[in-house]
Image (cartoon, rainbow, N blue to C red; front, side, top):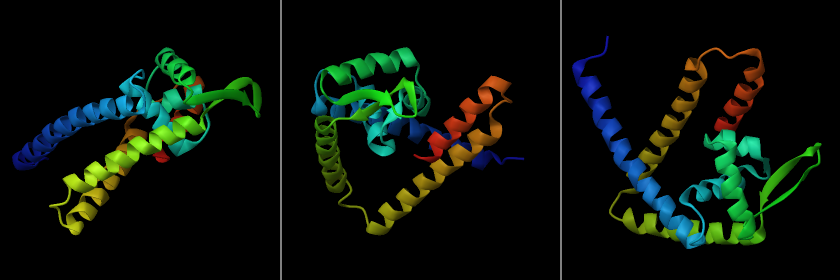
Length: 175
């Protein structure tokens, strides 16, 4: 049985997450604009995914980001037209395409990330290094907890969805 105090503390945490996620969306908007004013904020996540995971099929990117293929297709079209990603035939399956960052896409993304890192460095100047380490460790623990909880609590899958779930779990572990 959960105590009232624990429930209240978890509610406070949830409220802080809401504030953080609003800031994260605004941050993604700023990063996207810095990379190129013509791309959507969600496109930053596509670029960052390719940076972290390397060349990927569209289905893997969509699964990793939790978005539909039509949404991803629209973002990739813009990113490709702007010269930030390129598509090539998957060497393992000639029917599929692999999406990867171009040098221009990588350069612009890394520049924006470098600027963001400098902003964090300035913003966290008053923090003790121990506080930064503690927060980083707790966030890593939270991300692992999310992955484990989702893996244990998702509803049973039909036969055709089992492979999809296995790939999704692997993609999440790569975060």
